[in-house]
Image 1 (cartoon, helix red, strand yellow):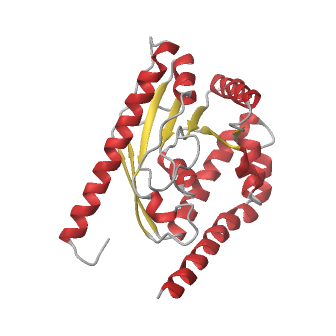
Image 2 (tube, rainbow, N blue to C red):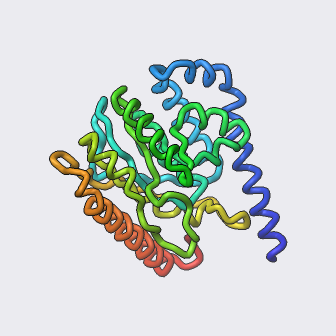
Length: 258
């Protein structure tokens, strides 16, 4: 039985990368044009959202997004979410319509095809390099001034899968306070189970996301960073526990199903 499961997991991983590659190959000329100028980024973002839907549906994920508040058009925000899955980028893109720029780890730029565009459209950070972190702030400031939003996974990486929610780094919250933009907390409920970084794991099924009420930063100062950090962390942690309780209740009510 374990052999058959591992064969499924292997094929499932290969299928994921095929889904990632197909739209990039088909739309390559348009994608190249869309990244030639920073002002054309909204076009790239729309294509990226379609690319994400293509992958999520192709993987058999049933996406359900609950929104307590909806971002206003032409306003900048700081989007933050928990991060434990290779599908987090895709779910974030389909959860948010406002064009935003990812701040993410430089290692992802090494992925064939995907990395080519990721490197040219995202703000890459080497967390072991203090100079790199400073550059991130400067590039993010420029994008915010252009009317873009920013997306950061504040756990600062992918934690051990036994950890429900790792500690948050301060960067996203400090940046939001500096620019007096609202923080949009988003909780991903099933990504770790659906498609984690563990190779022999994953399966089709539901993929829940909740966009929480925004956290205002107007009037706050840098000294308030830790408070906003803790508030956001507690909000996501509480929602993750709620998602888990809902899953357990559903399983008890419908034996033999997810």
